Image (cartoon, rainbow, N blue to C red; front, side, top):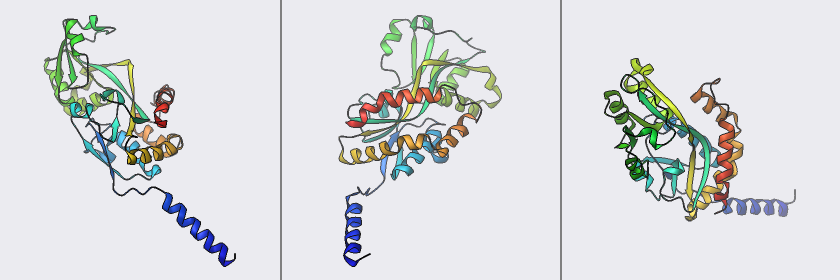
Length: 269
């Protein structure tokens, strides 16, 4: 290759390198402590944390996670957030990238309260329902239907109150409830029952405010690697480690794809 061509190729390479956005420091994602999905006390910050770690590595994004109580998390307007979009009061200008799923469930401690079928608020009448503070926006609707609502600041508190009979049942992320039962009452796990709420299958998502210049650049990085990462062997290994290789719900991929399609319109903000 002639000297002029070498110089030209070098100059082109430098120009392309300079055009790439440079991340000066780690971005900080807001989350709420909810093991086994998100927790600073678990390897990789938990199951969802491992997914975020994989996606961020593919996207070339250096990051950290800051944990907030549910109520503060719900009202957060941070540029970078991870978790369930439905918990946020304001979703405007967010590019939302679903990377996993979770299911909500009713939990019962059967020595105190038999499992009841819940199809509407009428089925809850006369009962005391435990919820995480800030996780429901329509508390007054429950009260009008004769349902007592007790708000708590942690999954641990709800499970303990369930065991003592202080509440009749509670709504929790299914995996988080089971995790806490195993931790607190390992010899009584069979006395706790849960009923999955089909309408409350929700995405684990990376959410980025694209009105921020940095946010717009980072969102584009995640968008470019989303499909490739979701179909990678490393991603599949994370899913299998969480569910068990032979226990992955058959509908999981279908549901996740629905959320990806639903939120894809946010990527062009």
